[in-house]
Each structure stands twice: as C-alpha cells, then as structure tokens.
Image (cartoon, helix red, strand yellow):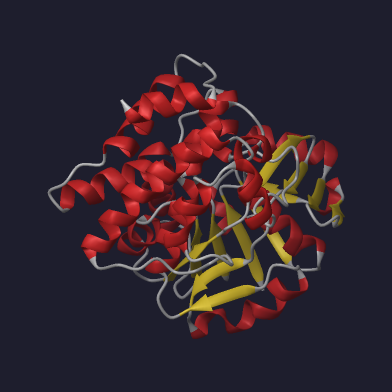
Length: 332
C-alpha cells in the first residue's frame, strides 16, 4: 500500500511518521524547508505517555511536488484549511481513480471542498483530536490524548491494521459532522492559547482564560442547539458540560478535570505556532465557522467574532494578553 501525506507539517509528519516507523510505506509531500530538515534529522516522534519512535533520514521519503502522489492508494490531506482548495486542484491532476483521500484537518468544510474537486476518488472526512507540537529538528510531540476519528467506510478496511500498528487506531463513525463540531468546540481554545502566549496547561489552570473559552463555547453551543445539531461526546465529559466545568474555581476545576490537565507542560496550539512563525492562522475556519453559523441562523456571535478580530490583528501586530485583559475584551 502506498500512503501519501499531503501537506506534511506538524500533524502530517506526526501521523505519517508513526505509520512509517511501524513499517508502512509513506511518502511525505510538503515544503522544501521541511524536506531539508528531515533529510538532516529524520523524524523523532514522542507523546505525553512517554512513547518515542524514530525514522532515520534515509528512511524518510519526502517530496515537494504533487506528482509524487501519482501512485498513492491512500492520501492523508493535512494542509491548513485555507489551502484545501489549492491542494484539491493539485491532487485532481495526479491521483489515480479510486484512491482514498482523507481530510485530517481542522474545521468543518474541508472534506466537502476536496470531494467537489476529486470526483474520481473516494473522499472521507477525518479528525485529529490531539495536539502536536513541532519542536524543530524533526521532533514532533503529541501533547494531549486522543485517537483518530473518521467517517465509516469499507474503503478503509485495507488500512485499519496499519493505523493500529502505528498506535493510532481509527475510530469510525456513521456520522462525522457531530464529531467535527465537537472537535471545533475544543479548538475554540486555539485563539485563547495563541493570544495568551503560554503553554496549554498554564492557560487551563488560569480561571480567567478558561472563562474566555467557556464564553466562546457557550455561544457556539447555543447556535448548534438552534441548528438542531448535537455535538458528539469525544472526551469523557459531554460537550455541553464543558463551559460549566471551565468556569469553576481553580481548586474545583483541578479536582474535576484532572485528565484535561494531564498534558505535556510544553504543549501549545498550532495557532500559537502559526503566530510565532508569522504565518496566517486558521481562525476563519474555527471561530469564524461559529460566526458563519450565526449568520446562517440570522443571529450574531460577538465573542467568537471578537476572537477572530484579535487573532487577525495579532497576525501583524503580536502581543500577549493576560487572562483578565482578554476576558474584559470579550465581555465588552
């Protein structure tokens, strides 16, 4: 089986790297900068439970052009959401009919965008619930818990064992949209973490930051209820209880949400990484998706809209926000 990771950044290198480390034939396609990094260092893949796997530089097959996907049986699309349409157009020109294409991306609409353009391939929507930190030098670290979620399809049968052996079992779902929205609700924390400029665990132990996230989630949950869509339960706590738990005083939160804090002390979000690197963020496909839902329903989403504005400003004028500062900004 020929597996291709298209858009080999943090998530792509981690997922594809674990597949390669466990014996799957994987080709990474991405930027020349990453190609040079992995040609020097190879891949080092670690997680919050202490796992450590390596793929030597000679064992990393990394290409920089779409044509390298021509013989792919399975393509994992891990580009940023804003690049999905471009990736689909590039893949449409090279993929063989019948290839399986999986969107492992943030947001709600990427699978649909791929399916509109890749009409001769089988396009599936997946979701990566965990955080991956790119530490440089080919080191990618999974800092939070979670397995891979994906819509159920017989086309996945040849690949199930490979993901199991890689330590990334595929959790298949008959309906993927509720799962996507559950992940998006968690990802509403991305701008809070990015604006705070602190590790995730430090942010989540600060009640003011948690109240910012609770406000964004509550707003989104009200809109989803109006839409008639119930988010899936992808963690131990139902999503509708999250805002209440987040608002608890610190001593109660630490007691009731111990597993939420069982994350690597250095873990941060991909949005924080994007701001640090001076790259555009995925804010329009996260909190912006809540704003779009509100517009569709004839409503407003002022908390999420303000987070979108603050992150867009931070893309050109970086600053760090304390918890109380950010909370006042969202309440204003």
